[in-house]
Length: 208
Image 1 (cartoon, rainbow, N blue to C red):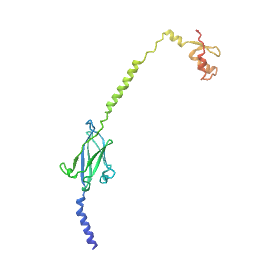
Image 2: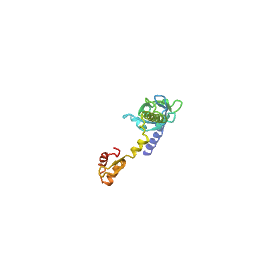
Image 3: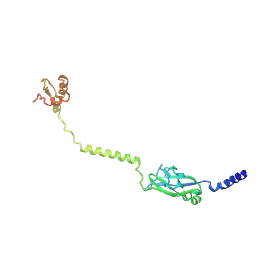
């Protein structure tokens, strides 16, 4: 008796299998920005509403658009998923898609078209961005160059006088060039480095 029941159950299962067999459901289309520029190498991911349990089987399915923005998403499903809602997420935007098995079985077989048009504009091309930044830097440099005032030139006599100005050390009276006075105070008189410039300011020139 048990063998007869087992045989009957197996036969019923085999008969029922074609009714729940999975079929390929393909969604194809083109993804573009609002300014009609194709979304190149953009990741499209299948998402679901929290309580749309029929969709959860496909959650996380992901494809990448090609250089023309074209994409194809292939799902394996059966009759029980007909009418289920899924979302195609791309660059922070979501687009609803209702699974329609009847439409997918019409020529071309197993395919349903759904184009995606984002609300956002395409980002500027890297080359254009680089040229714009480079142009801005050049413009700023040019304006700075125009605004820069030339330093007043000194005559050779003035340069020689400034370079060779002789002063007397406020401590020992020794004559030395002004630019060497601070070093003289620190080394020869062991003056604190923070006080040496103040003492050097009081040195009188030999020309005065």
